[in-house]
Structures are given as structure tokens and as C-alpha cells.
Amino acid sequence: MSQSAPKGLRLHIGLFGRRNVGKSSLLNAITRQQVAIVSNVAGTTTDPVEKPMELLPLGPVLFIDTAGVDDVGALGEMRIARTRAVFDRTDLGILVAAGGEWGSFETELLAALTARQVPVLVVMNKLDQGRASDTLTAELAAKKIPLVHTAALNGEGIAELKQAIVAQTPADFLTSPAIISDLVGPGELAVLVVPIDKEAPKGRLILPQVQTIRDLLDGDAMSLVVKERELRHALDQLTSPPKLVVTDSQAFLKVAADVPPEVKLTSFSILFSRCKGDLLTQVEGALAIDRLQPGDRVLMAEACAHHPIGEDIGRVKIPRWLTQYVGGQLAFTHVQGHDFPPDLHEYQLVIQCGSCMLNRREVLSRILRCREAGVPITNYGLAISYSLGIFTRALSPFPAALELLHSADQGRCEGR
Image (cartoon, rainbow, N blue to C red; front, side):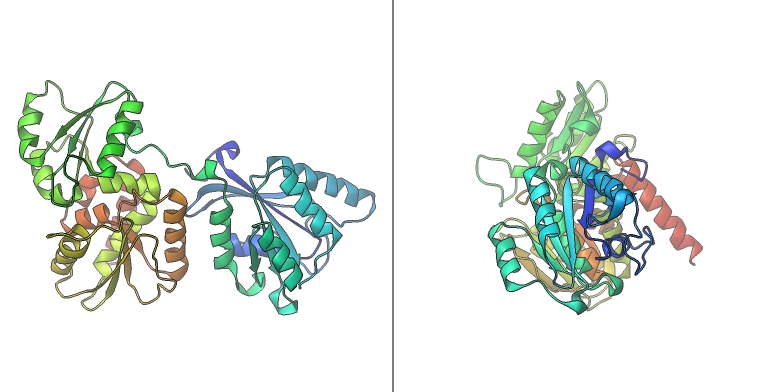
């Protein structure tokens, strides 16, 4: 979704607090834009200020910067009424205090939000003037309400605040999009190329393949499941071409050679990049492969904790293909399960697996941490197709990704 996404489809994030606690400064720091007027004069924000934007990796959000609730006078009462009306359309509340101060206004605000069952987090702004008391910290912890300390004017704590926003975002807004059914459509056919390798449990398919088949069935679409050796014969038997061919990323080259160029092709891993994470951000991350130099460090993040066997995709094949593409040795670090390094600055690239074992919140959190650290992140299927020279073909089902790739190619040509 873009800036034109309807307000009703956006996550509404309301900023509440006393006058002059720095709500507008926080909004400007989060959005990295001068959205709201900042002044030392209390009450500068007179009416709720709305800012629609893309907050990656969450997607489209609407920030609402409200007038201070401790305003005074008749006009102030009107402002307060408008502020309180924002409660009813808030999906996530950010309660802002400053300098360690916490009183009846903040307590009432917190009660109003929690009474509406609105997820909330507390920001103690103006860190240089004081921190939250131990008592308040303990009370919030007991209620499982996150507390973040910030100094909005110099950007301190803003990365932690964004992480807290992702963590507190209601599950409805983190529900994974369809895996494939929206790309195929009711009554249409998808051909799924499923290699049977040593790491697939005997008698079973691996989870991404099962989930993809189920999503096709839920979408009233049809699936034809074949191994890569039978693909060409299967396509020859069809009276009309399939809407989409999906392959295990390891078989990309062979499948691409067997599938007619007019038939869209992608991989299970790339489908899950869209379903579990943020496809466009990870497409951008794949473009960073061109900037890798021999000796650079690459983090390989696997969601499942399987025991690597033979030609393991994450530990053998991708490192081999990337090394060949770069023309020199790279330093690979591998993590599994929920392990993810707290400090990413030593890495030049992070490659996440398809993440079938992780929920979308965790994947989005990893993407956000990479963005904050300035480290590009991509995923297995995207990295494989890029290093093998079939990146554009692998993105054929995704118009927005192709547009991003076209813009990036234009930019590189103009920069030469």
C-alpha cells in the first residue's frame, strides 16, 4: 500500500499527553519529517494533526498528534474534547510524559486507553530532564505496558520506540497476507515444483509447501504438484498454461529453463517474504549483493533449528552462489530459531530464510532492526535468484517489486 491507502485501512497511532511533553517532536523524529510544529510554548498543537505515512516494516499507518489534555479555559476544553474523541479511533496509543513526571493526567489517560482495550506504550521523553521512577517502572511492567525513554530532539531512543510500536501493534494488523491465492485466483492453476531432498521428512512435505497448497485450496484455486524432473512433461500435458509456477529456490535455474517465459515464476521463499515480512524491503536488500566485497560479513538467519544435512541451502548452497557472484570469500555467520544478534553493525548483509516457523511480528521486528542499523536484509529466495541472474523473472508476479527494481536500475544507470 502507498500513501494513497484509505485511512480506514491504516493502523491509527495516537500520541497523547500533557502540553509541551514533546509529542510533536516525537512525531517528527519517528517520521523523520517536520510534520508537526515544535515550540517551547505550551499548547502549540491546537487540534489533532494527522500524518499518513508508510512506517516500515508495518506498512501504512496514520499518526495522530493530539492537543495536550491538561489545557485550560473554554477553548482548551474544546481541544480536550477533540483529543478524547481520538481515543475511539486509536488502534495503538502512545502516552507521552516528560522529565520523569507522572501524575493524575497520565494515570487518567492510561485508564481511558486501557478501558477501551487499546494497546498502549508509555514514552518518557526529555530524558535529559529525568527518567521514570522505579515505582512507575514496576507498575507498568506489572501491567505488561512497555516503557521507552527518549530524547526526541536528538533522536535518542527513537529506534527502541519503533521496536515497541511493532511489539504493541494489534495482531489484526500483523495478520499475514495470503501466501499465493490472491496471485492465482479462483479456478486458476498453480504448478508447484517440490524437490524431495534429504531434509524433507520422510512421507511428508516441508511446511511452506503444505501451507501454500492449503492457501490455494482456501482460495478455490487448483494446484499441480510435481518434482523438477517431471515439470516439463507436466506443462506439456496442460491444455492451457498455469497462472503461476512456484519452485523451491534450490531448483530455480532448472525450473526457469523449463517454464515458458510468458508464464510467471517465483519461489516458495519469495512468496513467504511477502507473507511473513516486507517483500519490497527485502528486494532492496537483495540489490545490496552488488555492493558486497570479499571479506564482508553476511548473517544467515534460519527460523527452524533443523540439523544441516549434505548440501544445506543456508550453510552450503547460498554461501557458494554468493561467493561465486562476489568473486571472493565472504564471512558467513549462522543463527537459528529465535536467536538474532542484538548488534548488527558488523554485517554488510542479513539473509533471512522464508520464516515459515516465525510469526510476522518477529520477522517485521528483524527487518526494522536491520533498517535502524543501516544493514540491508533480504531472504533466501531473493538472494538465490539475484546471484543466479534470474531476479527479474523471480519477481514477475509482483508488480510493485518490479517497479522498485526498474527504478533502482534507472538510478544506477544515471549514476554512472
